[in-house]
Length: 417
Image 1: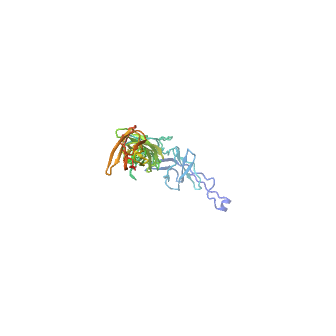
Image 2 (image 1 turned 90 degrees about the vertical axis):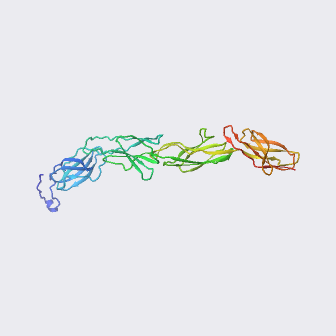
Image 3 (image 1 turned 135 degrees about the vertical axis):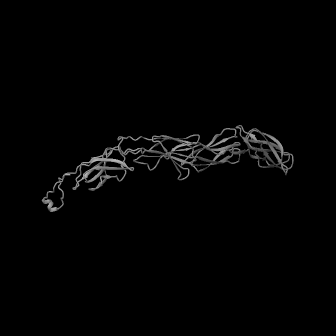
């Protein structure tokens, strides 16, 4: 390079701070600036006359310039940028030479190249199929490459389905062809989570994109074995879940017998693990179950999927309720007439039995036709003494087709003086 001899000036002699003339010629621009990949890393090389250099990255998308490296006189004309490049569709490397007075040359420029990241997939749909497999779908916006064929382009893009669970820390990774937007995962023991891990030569996302969580719901139910007609039947229920979910719709279903269809008699929303008591009315022998419909919800950034689940049938019988039985008055004189008052449900037509205690067992006295809730029956006192009675109903089938077991009144007495 051409060098200028220094010209001393009075100011320079007095201060001793000007060592190179202000009009010194800048170095020549570096040439043959190249960007390549070597062992997976970006390498920048150039040619010059042995000067110190400044290596910068220019972002043509934003107009910003970033300092990458500096070199000293005599160092090799080869550097590896210390960190990853910013995301951009148009970058280039500029290299300047620096003279002894820190004057910089015109930059030598590399070709344009891009550092585009792959786009994160966006979940679209997830479906639990009848055989237990899971079909997931997503979209992924393609990279718009405005510098095709640049020296740093490599085929390093990838997409991997990540299946986590059911055990803590258990993970399966399934590589997929680039451009894939759906996949059907064969049935797995749950619960499992599905996500997508994507990246390329410039970037890999630290957190996979969520797709779906697949699990099962496990309902439990407790049903009283027997209850009085028209009395409250307290059914206890709870659902545990393999899903991370706040609430689940559940149904209490009933049927008269195993050859009849189920119908819903109660609905509620429950948090997994929460215990509930649902009060139904006992109107005849029935079977009950807790039914959890299939779940498909988009919540907490992923689809929640679970098949329908049910308890086995639990049976509960109903007995007739003879809630009133006695004489009015219960003490009377010989030859008078008293009234036996009885109230019972159901009111299905039936023949109830009036029974008398003989000291050892109950004996049949007479049958009484019955088709109403309240019944008043006149009785004439014909013998002195105290006698104990009771009312016993038969097995009956109500108008709704439900069977009701026999019911008995409490013993009641008649005293004749």
